[in-house]
Length: 105
Image (cartoon, rainbow, N blue to C red; front, side, top):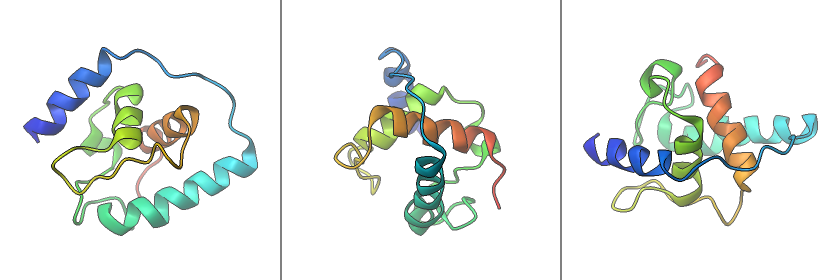
C-alpha cells in the first residue's frame, strides 16, 4: 500500500491529462474493458483479487489524474501492467473517473 501511495503522490505532481471527449460508443467499450480486463485481476465486482480493490471506497477519493497515471504506466514491481500501449491519456482518465464515480457491481 505504501508503494501505491508513493506512486499516487508522484502522479499528483504530473499535472492533468488532456480532456477530450470520449464518444458514447468508446465509453461502452472502456466500461467493458474495466469489467473484463481489470476485473480479471481486481475482481469482477472490483472488490479485489490478485490486485487491490477498485471500488470508490477503496480508492478513497484519489486524484483521477494519479489513477490514470497508474493505469497508463503500471506499478513497477507489482502485477499491474502498463496500459499506455493500448489506451490514450484521455481514455485512462475516463477509466479513472469511472472507477471513482460508479458503484462496484
